[in-house]
Picture 1 (tube, rainbow, N blue to C red):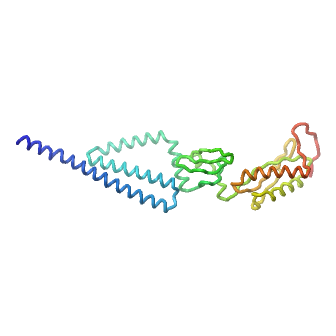
Picture 2: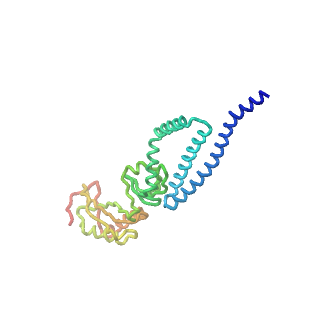
Length: 272
């Protein structure tokens, strides 16, 4: 009987508290996971009603889910009897190490959040980054996918976009073509300018407002370089470019405008 009483007392004093802690931990886990699920749903609804992008809603919801579950597990570990101070220290050290290793990625991630929140551009916008021009296909957390008019797919890190100069042509709904045409010095500039103005006025896709700009850009060794700057909608960038060049060539041919070749050029007079 003495042994039975000893084991019974040992069970009561040592095992029962552990079992109670385990039961409490399990109950806390079940209730905690249920509450986290409810909180996540409320946050999703609130973010969607606030007009946030789907990508940022998904990310913030997942981030909140992970953070709350980690916090819950730390509390459960404390209930079971684990030294939570040491556990938090280990997690903090691990997070610091991961942050150093992923410094560049975290910069792109933060930039992606800024882009999704402040919306300097959106999907299907035409934008220019440095010397690249194209339409935004996808905005991701770490990068932005851009498709150029030549159907090249550019994967641009969001950090580069935030740090650089961005031109959003879709905000104003128009983009200016940077075209160049040459004419010989002997030809009449008013005549050529009139021909180009007629071509631009008759070309579908060229906007009347703002008005196209035409002027002498440079004096080359063999000819004048004319700047032709019509405005078009972003979607018409390449079709109008090709059509304007085609019509200018035809107009020059019909009007008898000659061109200067780089070889065998003779000196001649300058036209008015």
